Each structure stands twice: as structure tokens, then as C-alpha cells.
Length: 512
Ligand code: NAD
Image 1: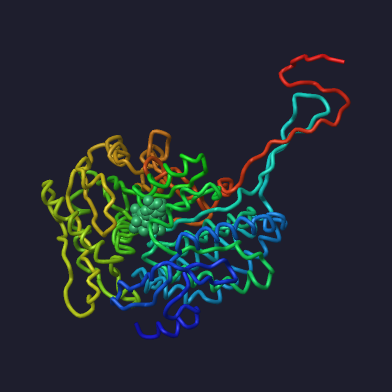
Image 2: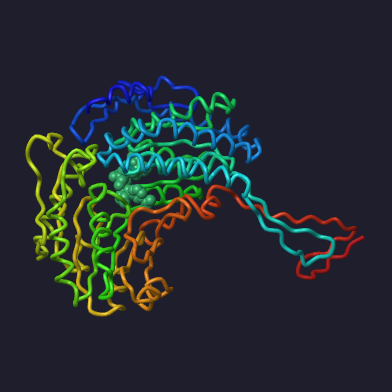
């Protein structure tokens, strides 16, 4: 890509980088080299030296030490430091956003949007730093006061996925920091450079504010580094974003040592389209949800549950819309669909297409691999649509690619049952102008997902709400609302300011 060298230079990440850093310092790490290739054009962007086990151990030690200083800085002062990080991110938005696009293959708009999300969460966390409220309760005993406080946890381990290579880190770290924790980040091995770029961007803020070394750490590497974090009793909370098998493995390892985990895993998101839906609003939302980020969002629309009476109309409108999609370099603003992350993802897309055929599915828009000059990386695929049945194994499984399943329903209850009948529970939506359908969908008997929208697609959440899903999606909540509580421990305090010792529940215990 033209101009990428200038961007890499400006972000301080040209060629080989140290993938182990503790905020201000980059460490000479001893692990193997991890090279990053762009799925856009196949170019080698740079390389990162991974963490060896000894590097990892030293980083967690440094982080644990830093925690003792960082937790004693008043929360609003920590918030002020996070505010300054937001200012730096504003300064580097264009460069970081472009690198996010180039390293992941998402559109430039989405790359910039991801950095904007980081900026927004900095603002949110700054305000939050003055609102880490606990409750005061009335004691049942005279001259007693009872209240609760929230204290920091310690070292927070962050394991992130490739598809939101920087925003997910900021959702976790900015909130964890104002709460008084220190962070050790294990970024995706598929997007190692964007992580190092983030550390470089905030480095001056850490230095200028004399933040102890170890508050913001990175340990680059693959699955094994993530496993070290999951198994390490010094890591109080492991916040892991990724596939369901990864979450199962992390969840089990953390539970075995009775640590805390926050899991943000795969989805299998559906949109219900009712007979009263405004298709002018619904169709673009469905297409964006299914093909945006080449179907590689945890909230991508995978299943479309359409009422019998409008099924054929929706089908033909979608086929027409798909006919207009432009596939190609995602940095070009006229392009709708960029590449998948790598060739392994392309093989998974092809396998899924094969399984759909074998199960008896019929394609409304056929799958395929575009050929020719712009597709040299071998990571591009054609978004497709297939008529299927919800219970088929392939439909029950999250395929991280632009494959949209069309499913027919007859009545509102059946639509909700179909929507819920998958192991995952992340995002869901209904398009309707019928108040009853909408309210039923949002009621306790409605969608079983962490996110349920009306007349909005499944993808594109705002940072102000708590983000996450149920069932095999893992149950975690991040970002807004009171998600901060996952990063703190609650302590209940009772103080006796009287001269007697009344016991709770009226128990008498008298001795001289
Ligand atoms: P992945 O599971 O392959 O990897 C995610 C991260 O986990 C990587 O950093 C990887 O190195 C690490 N990892 C893998 N196995 C591990 C193990 N056993 N122990 C510790 N760490 C391990 O996922 P991916 O391909 O990078 O991302 C796509 C997946 O992530 C999809 O399933 C998507 O739905 C999910 N995702 C979920 C959310 C959410 O908020 N719910 C957000 C983004 C992505």
C-alpha cells in the first residue's frame, strides 16, 4: 500500500519490533519472530519479536509491582491520565485507523471508527473515574454504619481477537486503569503491529505523568502466551475475547485456580423480519450486518428469519443488493467488501459452503473466490446467501465469513424460538412496525441475547451500553453501563461507633 511506510515510521513500528513492552520500555524479548502480512495485498508489513516464557514472567512481576503504586493514585487522577491518552489517540487517529484497516482488511471507515471508539471510551472512563460508587445501607444494629466500597483487583490480563485489534483492548484497559488495576495485553497474533502502535501512542503520556513501569504491558505471541495468562494465579482477572473454543479453554483454566474471567466469545446473530417491517430500513441493515467487515464481526448478521408473506420479496431484494456489492481493496472508499483475515479463513468459508450444499441448502447468491489483479493476497471471497434450516449443524456454528442464512417463519412465537435456538447468545434484532411484535421480542420470553435491537441491525454497538452475550458467548459484559464492576472487588464495611457490642440477628453472647 502506498504511504504505509510513512505511517509505520510515524507510529514508530517500522520493520522488527519488540513485542514485549512495559509501558515506557521495550524489552529485548527472546521469543520467535512473528511476521504480519496484510490481507489487503499480501505485503509483509513488519515483524514482532514474541514473548518467551521468561519474558512473560518478568512482565507480570513488573506489573504486580506497579500495581502497588498505581492503586494508591486517586481514581480521578488516574482518569486524568486516561483523558490524556484520549488526546493522543485523537492526534494519531488517521495513522492508527489506517494501520488497523491494512492489518485486518477492514474498511478505512471502520478502521477510523475503531479508533474513534477508543477515544470515546477514554472520555467515558475519565468521567467514570469520579463515579465508582458504592452503596450505604442502614444497619440493623444501633450506632453502626454499613457501606460498601469497590477496590481494584490487581493485574488484569487482556486476550484480544484479530477483528477488533485495538478497540477491545481499550474497552478493557481504560476502564481497568481508572479502577486502579494494571494491564497485561496479549494481542492477536494475526494483528501484532496495531498493538505495539497503541503502546507507542500512549507512551509519552505514561512517561510525562511518571506512571510506574508495568501499568500498561504487552506480551506478544500466540495461544501459548494466552494460556500462561489464564493459568497464572498472579493475574486476578482474565478478560478474553475470541472464539468459543478459546473461551472454554481460558474459562476452565481460570476457574481451576478460582480466578475471575470475563469472556466475550462468538455469536450467531439473527434478524427477524416481520410482515410490517419497513424494508427500506431493513435491507441496508441486513446487508451491512452480513457483509460489513467481510462478515468478521462477532455481531455480524448470520441468520435472517423472514415471515412467509414477505419471504420472496426480501429474497429478491437481497439478491439485487448483493449484485451491487463491490469487492476489493478496503482502503478504497467505493468498496463494500474487503478480504478475510487470512487464507485459513478462506478455507473455512469454502468448507462451510460445501457443508451447506451437502445439507441440502440452496444458494440465492452463490459463494466463490474472485480472481484477478486486485485479489493477489488470496484472502478475498464473495458474500453469499443460502436458504437453509435452522437446526442444521453448519447453521448452528459460527462461520467467520460473509455467509447469510435465510430461514422462513410462520408466526411470531416461532420466529423468536428460531432466533433463540442456537448455542450462542450475543446480538439479535427485529424489524417491525408492530408494537406487539417488538415488545414480545424484548420481553423475558423474547430474545435470549445480550443485545436485542428494534429496527437496527445486529452489529455496531455504542460504548455507553454494557456489551456482551449469553450462553456460549460467555456471559461477560464490557465497556459502558456498570461493566466496570467486573474490574473491581466489592468490600462490605460495618463500623460500630457505640459503646456496646450488639450482634446481628439479635444473638445474645454475654460474658464479663
Ligand atoms: P481466536 O479464538 O482464534 O483468538 C482470540 C485470541 O485468543 C488470540 O489472541 C489467541 O492467541 C488467543 N487464544 C487462542 N486460544 C487460546 C487458548 N487456548 N488460551 C488462551 N488464549 C488463546 O479468535 P479470532 O479468530 O482472533 O477472533 C474471532 C472470534 O472472536 C470469533 O469467534 C468472534 O465472534 C470472536 N469475537 C468475539 C467478540 C465479543 O465481544 N463477543 C469480539 C470480537 C471477536
